[in-house]
Length: 493
Image (cartoon, rainbow, N blue to C red; front, side, top):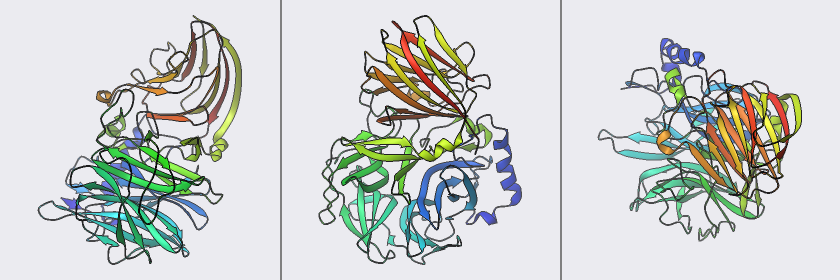
């Protein structure tokens, strides 16, 4: 296999081939981050440094060039001044050392001593294809130059654990550096390891974080520990959970625990129950950062491993969610779209409609827009929204707000191009449906993100409509509903 260590080593003809087909895609996003070619997955190095936001993402640009003997996997670097408009800088962390020869895997970054301090997993394989993980450190200066430390911060395996050891999330407090890393025990259960360093170069394993979840999936990926509102929060992506009713419907999950702050000595984390962070179809591998004004902001991959998406036939796959601000309310995370996204709005229209049974409201929306919907149930029991619908409201993404069942159902079985149907085409979100229920919905060319009642619940999903699906339908069941609808077109970034 031809393994390119640096992007600059890849023949220009191969790069042009990889970037040609995506340009013809019907599904290119307009205000979401996605790759110019190849495969995007986890957000990495999510941080604020030197007056700009920095976001890297896992990137395999040659994945769809039709030749399995060609390979490159590293980080791609984006910067922004406002979290909305992004500039692509090109390759960031590259697989160019003996410690990351088989991929620069996920990691994180923080500003430290006038540099951006980066901590990531280097993936390697020996001649017998045995994995040896390395937890690697690097720095980026204010001119954007990245320098890897010559030796790993932490090498190899830990007794009692397998070689699945990756995705360090770093933070600093009281002149010490900490990181939480996903790991698998030898009994094939997942957990997190806590590392500590005095100099951010040499790291020691303090031990496993002590939670109540001792048998909870076979691997925990992309862990993130932080404190918010005097409470500790642990977000992670467990693999191997069994579906329970409406819970854990995706191939892999991402969720969180809220509790007391982590005890740095005993590593005890006293917490409440595990909650899924997003109840939609496509959401994984989150990472958070702190903005200059103190907000905790989350980014995530709007996709899942081992799922084949319709964009792959156009030579690319994957996008990131819109950034979300996190807060805690009654022991649960509240997620809200960041305020900066409002600058994308234009052509505002507002409607006040009473919708009766056997009637409907229809609006031509186009392919990228934002909706704010306030529903007042009068005599009705259910309100249905057909998003990105055709003129007959037959092809659509269906959102049903069911007052009697206290749940919201999302159905993408008629959304357009089908995929991942083995994991179901509907998702059910339990929530209290009061007489006044609010939805905020962001729709791009091939995605939908739904924020329910101010972000108490969120559901994200990829959808791949046909070109004639540019309408919104609203219908009421068993009586009339009063609806206030705010609609904005959104500009392309």
